[in-house]
Image 1 (cartoon, one colour):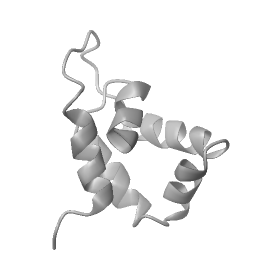
Image 2 (cartoon, rainbow, N blue to C red; image 1 turned 45 degrees about the horizontal axis):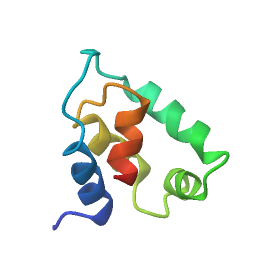
Image 3 (cartoon, rainbow, N blue to C red; image 1 turned 60 degrees about the vertical axis):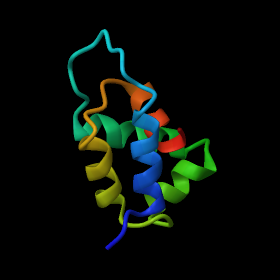
Image 4 (spheres, rainbow, N blue to C red; image 1 turned 120 degrees about the vertical axis):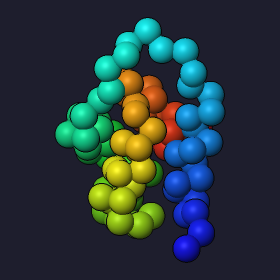
Length: 80
């Protein structure tokens, strides 16, 4: 199976994030909480949580595989 467009966006976003002051990786729960909080005000994130772009758990797994350090990492992965 080929790479989905959401996975391509996640991989693309990480290309621009290389210098980190924080070495700790966000937990899956923190990423989920961030996305769900953004879902209240942004249509893209609401549709993401609702599963319009594929399985939400798969998307969380893809984000976590890139070891996000902070909220900005997650946003850049998704919108980058």
